[in-house]
Image 1 (cartoon, rainbow, N blue to C red):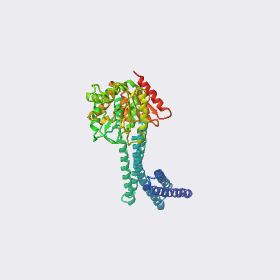
Image 2: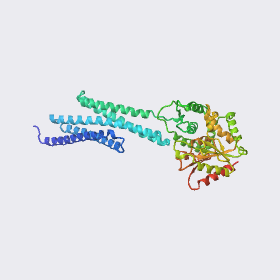
Image 3: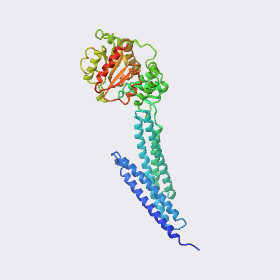
Image 4: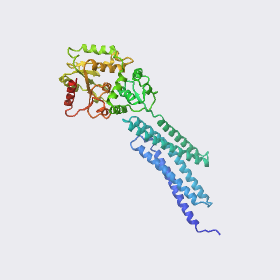
Length: 465
């Protein structure tokens, strides 16, 4: 005989689950609609975070609706209730439709997030920060791929019941969109480029090439050369002559940030300063005599200087005059102060770098500004020739150091062993890695008494044998 007692309890549980499932399915649809309504304002501060929160809520609610519908189905097991079956089907259809669309939106948002994070990683100042950024980007990409799989599952579920229905077709379109976004996000990771770019256009500092090449010589880092510019052949020649041809790779997007190379160079110097400097000098200067074209040019310029200056010890005074970070440019007042300090320590100031904008060159100074624009230093070997310019001054004309505002032009001579003081308003995050690592490399922050510190160092240079 059939027992009637437990059925009301079972049916009551089924009705409770049905109410919960329908409620969650409607809430999921509302959350998704609210998220999609923000799609055109995601650039507004705070909106993308809200958008992501609403998508996550819609997915959570839709998953909850499916779980409740499954519990309702289990509670109705063995009962032939058409209304219950229709209700479960409607709930599942709505939930899967919401899931397909929400996961497609989340995959597309992950593509955006991975792209933004990869750009930040590329610009990171250290290798550690760069690698951490790429790890987080890959985690986002993994999320996009998970969403693509989830959207495909929901689309397949809907197609199983009615493959040509409007809701099934829409879900499949969402799943396809999610797959496209996930694949594009994965390509971002696959396109990651571990090389450092040797820039050859005028929009980048010429001096950055010194420490990009140094990172290849000292640490075996990969380099790519910016193609198609006037300076491209000269960069190729310099790197070939430096013996790092095997470190060159074809140019492509998503390289590492050049700013990381100063830290790489610093590590090599900290490990063995003498060896690092010896290796760089051999790579950058070579073992051939400095060409007469370079030594002759320098000698002629010093012969033209007033009597007595060519035989005395000298200091390079760098002038910076650029449109990038113009607040860092050399001021005339400070340049005149430094010129006076150099002369009072019985040294000859040699002006170099950008053009002197103060009218007549200060009395007692030698003008070698813009030397690199002379044809002697514009040939295929221009990068080595410019380092040979400094080396000639050092070997034959008593150059004992260099001083000036932070400029990458100083870094080549510094790596070759020329004592260096660079002036800055605040400690330079990137270049201070060389302080205490590269021999003779000093940072001078413009704070109380900084000119006295400069004077003491100049006196030490003057007294050195």
